[in-house]
Length: 70
Image 1 (cartoon, rainbow, N blue to C red):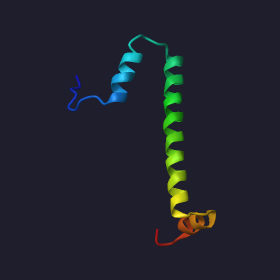
Image 2: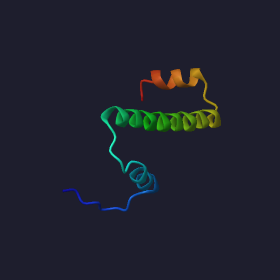
Image 3: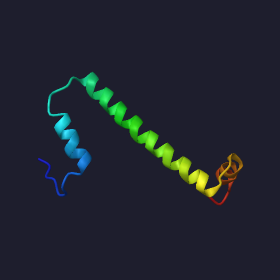
Image 4: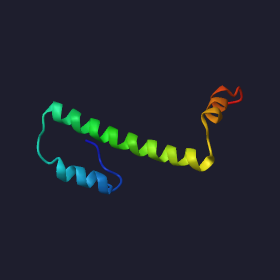
């Protein structure tokens, strides 16, 4: 049996409340996909913010990708 060594964060606590009923495998898959989409969108927004702050262009990224020292 696994023992928790750290308290649950707010997301974990809320998910436990919301998911306190059994759901079928298809619904579980849908929820996983929703969560994946949420976190992917959050990542894209943050990456876009950094991209804009640093003044990156497509050429900048091409240079980084093709840099032999990377």
